[in-house]
Image 1 (tube, rainbow, N blue to C red):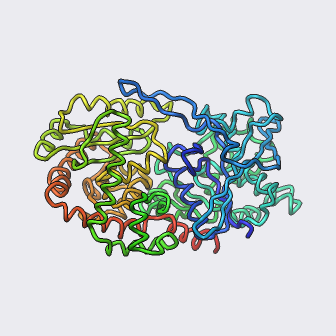
Image 2: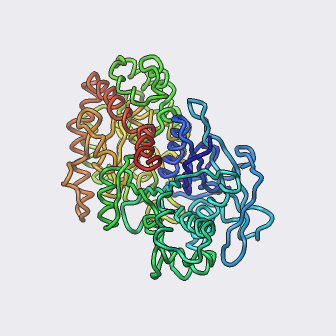
Image 3: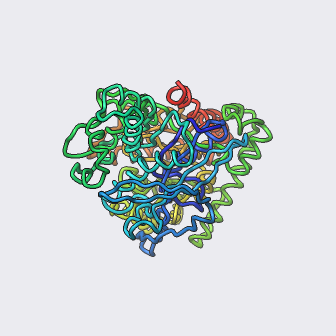
Length: 562
C-alpha cells in the first residue's frame, strides 16, 4: 500500500544504536512510527541522518558535563537508496541522498523511515556537514538543516516514488519549509506564476502541524535577511504569501498558516497554544508511548499471561486489575534489581533492594528543576530519618551550550556531600533509550518537577506507569489528565496554586516534602499492600490510555483521513 501520510520530524528515536534523537520529541516520533506500523497506517517518515549523533556525555569527578561526538556507522544500520535530489542553499545546489530503515509492527506492516544525508562527494566540505549534528551549530546551520528537512524531504519522497501522499504531518515547526515546496509543486502543476488564495487552501488541506512548545522563546525564529540569503529565490514570494514580510521568520507561524489541522500535545497545552496563537484553531491530542517498546520483559510476560491481545489492542490493559498484586510486585522487584546492578556498575555503590527509590530522568535544563528535592536539605534529612532510607537516581543530558543545565547536574552531584548515609544519590551518565528502559521500570516512584506550564506534555511518567510505577509530579502537561490522587500517583501541589513567582521553588519544595513525609514514604514502608494496589491501578488506568495506539487513532480520525 502506498503511504498516504508523510511524517516529518527533525529527530526520530528508533534505537540506541541509531543516535538520531536528543530526547522527548525524538522518542515520541519513534513511538508514533512504531504504532503506525502496528496499526497498519500507511505512513512514511522523513528525518535527517545526524551522522555524529547527539553526543556522548561524560561527567568528571565534580559532576561537570563534557561532550564527545557519538560516531555511528550509518551503513551498518540503514540501507542506502539510489535517488539523489538537490536543494538550493545560498544560491548553490546542495545534493542529498537517502538512507532507509523499516519499522515492522506486530501485524507485519512496515513503515519506512527516510534519513536525508548531505555528506556526499558532490557537495563542498562545509555543505557535507549539514546533516552531521542534531541541534548543532548556529542559526545559519539550523536554517540550512530545516531547508533540507522540509524542501529536500518532499523532493526525496517524490524521487523515491512516494507520490500518493495525502497528508504531510509536521512534528514541530522544524519541517515548516515543506509547505513552500508543496506550494511550488502545486503552482508548477497548474502553470501559475502567482499564488491565489485557493492555491494556499489546496496545500493547507494536505498539511497537519503538531506544536510541542508552550513558550514563545522555544519556537524557531530566523532573521529575515538570513532567510533571504539562504533560502532558494523561487520560494521567497511563496514565503511572503504565507507569513508576510516582517523582520524575522517564525517557523511555527509558517506551519500554522499552511495547515488545515493543528494540535497541542495535552489538553492544557492546547489551551496555552490557543492563547499564544490567537486567531488560530488549535486542538489537543495528548501524547502517548509505545507500550510494546517501553514495557519491560517481566511486565510483558505478565501481560501475555493475564491480558492476552494487549500488543494489538493497548486498551486491553485496563484488565491489568485482574493481575495478582504479588505477581506485579515480583516483576517490579526483578527490574529494580537490574537497575541497582546498573547503579553499582557506574558508581561502585551497593544499594538496597528494599529502600524506597525515586527516579528523575529527562533533559537537564533549568525549568525541569531536577534539584527541587534539595531545596531544603535539612527538611529532607529530617523526613528520611523517620524511615529506613531513600535512594535517588538521576539521569539526563544538558545541551552543550546550556550552561545552567550543566550547573544543575553539578548541583545534584554536590548534594551527595550535604546528606547523610540514609539518602543515597547517583547521576547516571549518557542517558539514552537503553538506560531509560532500565530506569523507568526499576524505580519505585517516578518524580517530575517542572515549572508549570512549561511541560507541554512529558512522556517519561507514562513509560513508568505501564511498568507499574506511580508518579509524584507537578500538575502540568499530561499529569493533569493522568493523576488520580492516591490511585495512579500523587500531585505536588494543587491546580491553581502554582504560579511563576519568586517563591515558587520554595512553595513547590514544601508541597513535595509534605507529600513524601505524610503519604509516599509511609505507604511504601508501612502499607505495602496498598502500594501494590496503586501499581495495578497505574497500569490499568494510565497505561491503557496514555499510549501511542490511542494517540494515533485520534490523528487518523481528526487529521489524516477526514
